[in-house]
Image 1 (cartoon, rainbow, N blue to C red):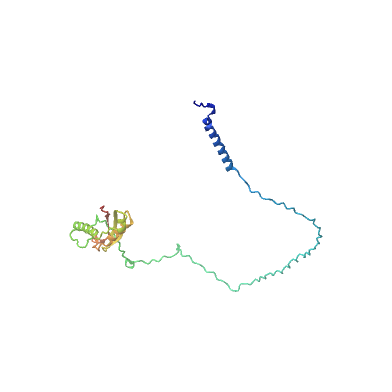
Image 2 (cartoon, rainbow, N blue to C red):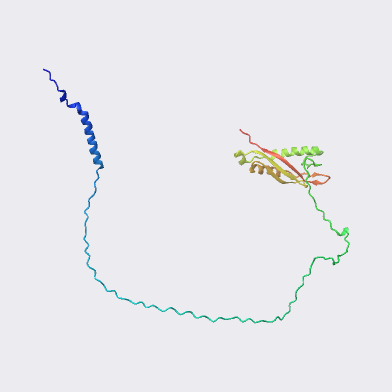
Length: 244
């Protein structure tokens, strides 16, 4: 004989609903438990202050003795100065300043001055003649020949001097500083190199260029109209680093 179950007697058909309701109830209780606050209760004692009646005290009246104001200071007697008038005893003579201007009535010395009485001072004048137009260029030591040969020899000796004394500045090489420096100098009437000036991309290169030119030897000065003259000269020095 088979047992038949009543579909209404199935206990597990609403289990998911009961689980959801129970879960919500537990979450609500947990939330209320976490949010519940308690406060410490302290016993407050109330003291009763008993105030007795104050007795009226008689305050004695005191009198203050006020001193009279001080007497005004007595005025001192004013002393007046006595001015005595004394007559002048010494007569002062006034000094007369004579004018130094020449008037129409003044007599001018008619003394004649001769040429021999005038001292003539000769002033030596230093003339500068450009290198390109000078009659005889400065003679570099070891150069001979006519003016054209002396000019070519001078330029060749200058180049040899630059190559011999050239030294690249160490600091400029480390900083990769290079460029062209124009050097200007003067070969004076005595043959010495003076007034050295330079213009370039950096002070280190300018200093080295001026050092090289300052090492030039004393030359035979240039001549113009059979007279020693100063000759200005300029030359470019190229500072260039070779990339390895």
